[in-house]
Length: 495
Image (cartoon, rainbow, N blue to C red; front, top):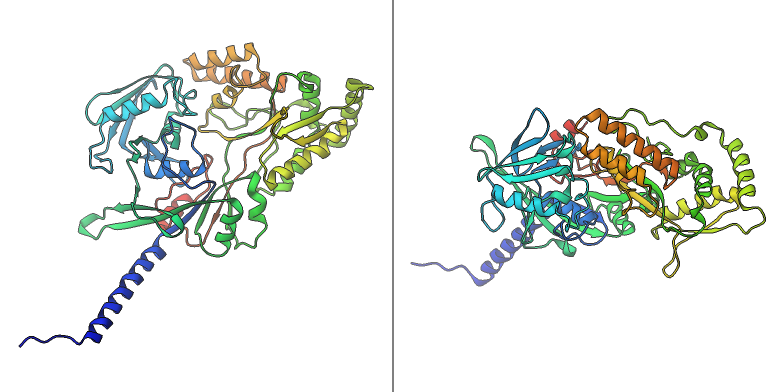
């Protein structure tokens, strides 16, 4: 005899099943780490087509890694390459690829990787690292799983460049991991990233899930403070006041000890800044200590040179002699020099190209106060007018000093010097590391003498990190893997 369940009982079973499924889905979402990147909604973009925004960079380095990648501390770890060898002369890097597939199921081959890297560094590429990789001579596939990068001169920092998201490999809008981009989205249009971690000895595989979204800095901070996000990435000096405006748990606000350029570059060849004496007066009049104090970033040091200490082949960079004079004495001398320079003529108004963010308001106010000593007024540049100065706020992609000085070559910078370019070109061809470092140091000194760039400090990069996140660490590149964010072992290694 066949028994049938009453209709109301079936309804109860169905309701319970649906509730369990919804609960399971909720539990899955609760286990997923929620990440917000300040800026537009992240998209997986081809780095050779256009520069990557903050969200696109985070997605690229986690969904479309390169040959190598950064760990939480900014150290090199395997990516698509499981291992590599460097020749004794430093001119050959041979990579052996791991066995991997594109999300479509097609095998990732050395020839594909070589072809994509060649395209990334081609002169027609929009990749911002194209110029930085000028020492690359050839990229060739030796076998189906082995490729070689041959250099014209040794570059000990090559792996740092290869780990940057700009050299993550995107093929037909797909990447080679470590995460896969799921087809279904999370709540509020979040992108769902999944990663399966094989377990040893027949144990059950572990799965990591991360939900990634973009938001304005203000909204990202609000969501983090409300417990709706575990990690906020992509903060800069411009939006730091938003993070300072809310009550946060201890150690939530963390800064990356990045190297790079933060300062003002001459934006046009004509106008008041044609005069090198005015450029020098502006550089000397800035109270860098007061400006840094306004942002309250631990460990941030003032800087008045294009190069900073600790770069490859360089020791400490000597500051210009004028910076040793007490600011009060310096201001008296600067005011007198400005009187001699301008005489009875009207003092200029300088327009500065800055982002429309509260941190930039702080910078503008400090510059206005400091340059008032010279009788120079400042205002924010607006469309339809000519900017005199533009902000440079860029993190260096490697420890090489070459990146710093190459930003001011003729063709790249408005104000440049042919002799400095000659030093930079000679450094690129130099086979001896000490010779290369000396040439780059001299190029930096000439840029400082020209006052083509008014250096202030290193860039500011910040994140918001919840107590749930154990695998996060600040690093000098400001790059953050989304792997192992809740892995305590990663946190212990980072510390």
